[in-house]
Length: 580
Image (cartoon, rainbow, N blue to C red; front, top):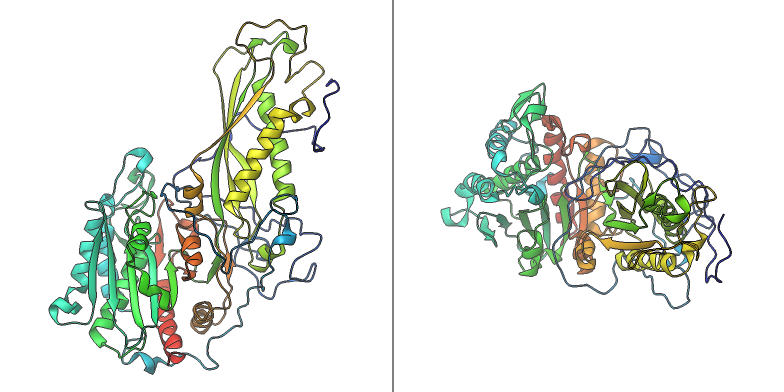
């Protein structure tokens, strides 16, 4: 049993079961583009004192996923954060204010400003979208030409695969050339209205900016649709992933949902603008990006923003078209990946009191850190208001230990995992909190961790003889799999639900689909939070299928893309109606 220990600054009650149930190997992925899932209908405990909502009150609309819906939760991707951007200060909608001037824990909900619950009833205008404001723009998507363009893009997808960890580098220039050829007849170079600019910061890694000029400085921007795709293994597919297959209204191929289907959709929308030349008050800005799936530095949207190529987009809403399921996506979470290395003392397993079992130490250290994390970053009413399926989470996803005989006490174990951080908490606060937990463990709390039986020890007794340089006390070391700036690049976002951009999106979806169900996901998107802090009105949407993101036999549907064209047109007409 544990003996008395020195006084502690903070008493922590621990579940003595620890992580006994942790399997020897937890299946997961520490980095890269990883899908994740949440159990259907999972309901977490609500805060005792909700902020900005009546306790226990139902939300007005059901989310298509998670605890507010009956549909199974589907995966959304995570893009590995490696791009370095300077820290941005200043407040905006969706940013919490966690100044620690009262000595309290770093994530207490009382410091989070309340937000209004999402609603599917809001509108930008009292009447429906007036299509006359877009001149003779067609309401219907030219499906044949859309499929033909998508076929060409999917035909390049073998060369657009991106996974830096596997040494796979895409050539987004190939997709950019397909789009530029489609738009060329309507470019200013050919006497058309479209201003087309290829933005190539790394050889063969093209971004593409297209502008349809309006008569005012107001804008509508469509950004985030990317040229690169995740790798596909043809042996696991029923169809060739690098060739478009059309069956029963489904369009199969790598990138159809994520995200070449969106590239083709917006390209065809630009073609119709160039062909019909409606006199718009607002300028339409489109940026197709590179390097989204791999998160490489200085390749894609981070460089576009840094060089000022998106500055005009401050003049209106910015629709990040890389979500799914044809509903307004109103929030994402941030992601921080971590490793916890626990070092003990190798010894014969018949004498457990003379060794320090690093596996048991890792179990209890994780249990301790997780319990403190959930105390300091509890569920928030704001997360319910934005219809997240769950709040902030910290969990292990992989475990490995030093190789040895079964009759040896393992001297070293590393547990790795991730944190999914609500957009209402700040990345820096989470990092500082975790670092503090580990320091407390090493400084004071190690002796108080539950042990497995009477003879298991994390601190050796005085009568145990050790060799020089051998540990007498277990050691826990935290390593972040990235720096603060890279984690902040993928920080979660809660969109501004009061903005004209959000109201236009919700109204356009409701008019197109008869009903609308805004939702939020526990996935991550690059740069959106930083752009929001810089004043961009970021709104999230997408028209593929979340269930097949990065999946085998990925597909989108013709029906969804036909409706998507209508949504885009309605957004433009609604915003035109409120533009002087």
